[in-house]
Each structure stands twice: as C-alpha cells, then as structure tokens.
Image (cartoon, rainbow, N blue to C red; front, side, top):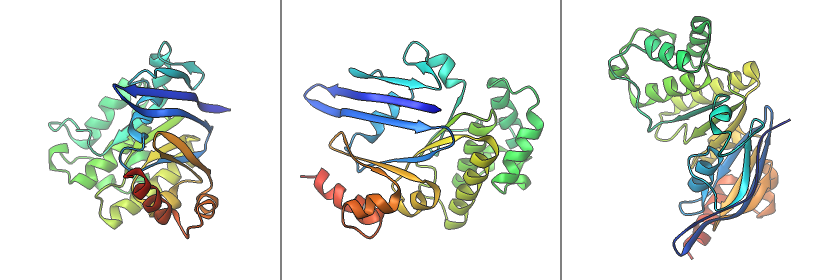
Length: 242
C-alpha cells in the first residue's frame, strides 16, 4: 500500500522552475530520505507533499486522499516535526504532549505519551517545563508529539540538525522503535548523511529540481562511483552551484 504517491510535480517561481517533474512514492512502513543541496528543490517538494503549497503541475495523494481537496483528511494521518517548530513554553512536557494528543483525537493519550517518552529515552523530562528544555530536548519532544496518533506517514525536517551525538543517537533509536511499533512510513530531509544511512533504507536525491537518484544508500553511492552518501551529496552540491 502506498502512503504517498506524487507524480510529475512542477513548481515555478517567476523565472525559476524550483521543481521540475519530480515523482515520488512511499510504501507503508518504508523509511525514505529526501536529499539535496540548498537550491535543489527539496524544501519546495516537501511543502507540496504536505499540501502547504499547490504544485503548478502534477498530483499528490497522501494516505489515499488527493491534495489539495483532501488535505484535511490526509493530514489526520500524518505526523510532522522539525527542530525549528516551537513548543508551548508555559506547559510541562507531559501537558504539551497531552495537548497535541487531544488535537489528534487520541482517546487515551497517557499510554502513548509514556511510550513515546520511553522510546526517546526522556521519561525524566515528563514534568519539566517546556521553557527549560535544551534545543536537543525540544527536538525529541517535538518528534514524540508527532507520533502520538500513530501516523501512517511521519515527516521529519532535519531531525538531527545541530544535535549532540548522544541526542542524535536517541533520535535514531527512537525512530526505529516508533516505525516498528506503529508501522509508520518515514520521510526525512537531512544534511547529515551518516544519520541518513543509519535511519533510511532508501534515498532520493534531487538536483536542479529533478530526481537524479532513487534507491538504497549503497546502490546510490555506487551509481555515482562514490564510497558513501556524503561524497554523493558533496558532488551534487558542487554541481548545484554551476
């Protein structure tokens, strides 16, 4: 079953074509990274997949709902987290998670909250004020709140950006356990190729608004004659500037 099916997406801004014929599908439970240097079209593509902007051409279907008309229904089964999203600072972590669980219609949120805190190794922060959290702790709480309703598709924008290695490790382990427990498919954007290789089973590289590679990390590296994804990223980033 496909949780995401995007076909021939095009988005133009004045004289620039930011996305030029991008197609992407994600199956249930699949872990996929959407990669590309700045200017490759990654952010614009992600926004179209979430229905935040409407493509000039092409179609997007999320969890069986065609966007933009079915966006409200589709987003009920999507979780989204990014390190730059703020948390309500006047609530304790457990209250923050309870608030978002209620927004998603979780009938009995307490077990989901406890399970999320355990998966990401922060049960000791349950009663901490959100205003007292470090940036890494806020990132972990943000990911937990995006998983409370067991989304069919979990979308994470730079989940390990600027995190200490130990916190990034918690993110990786927590995501693996969440996907296994909830059956969620995962779509990740990241500039950290090491984390991508550890988290995702498939990578999609964009360059100049087009898909230039799609496959398992090792196969994509081999396609470009490189040893790893880091070398592929650097190669494509240099081409993006030409």
